[in-house]
Length: 224
Image (cartoon, rainbow, N blue to C red; front, top):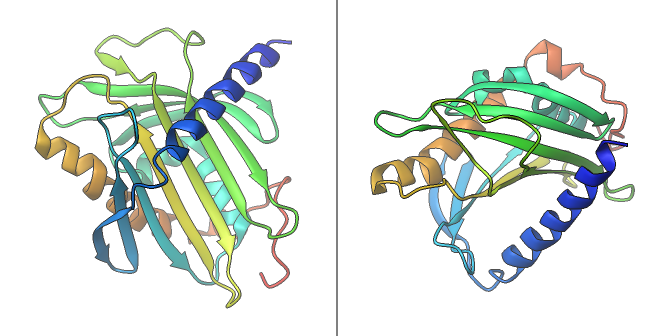
């Protein structure tokens, strides 16, 4: 019974987020970094002073379940996500839906940020592509002293099997940091942090606990 109102609210937020990002479809992604097989792009978003960021790479010999299992392991966040100091599961709503709390450690003198995110997974039964959408939600968890709670934050992961057996791995985010930030920290958040996060993600997902992981709602592509 508790999940229904949250699901409805999040559905509305997702629709609004999609509308906002769709309005920016004409804004071309600008390549900001291309190194070690990882590309980082940014672009403006209509109606927002903050840019969206997308990080893309291709991985070989990796299972879809492994990729999902690493992200689903909320407590592992600090090992691979840049600036993530703490993360944990708050509530398991269903097999593919959850509430996750994350605390981001920001460099002095910037105030730390945190977010309570509503996470949803889905898989296309024909292409086997997997998508995760995460949207900040409010009113479900008390704010933590010394941390600025993000209320406008959207992130997604997308995994698509390619014809050659590799997997496209893409991460996209659009966040309102809650206050003005100096240019140097904005550049870190839009280029350096996404790049380092993807590098660490690639290494972490190769570990045995994820390489052989099983995720009930994920079907592996026949080539995997």
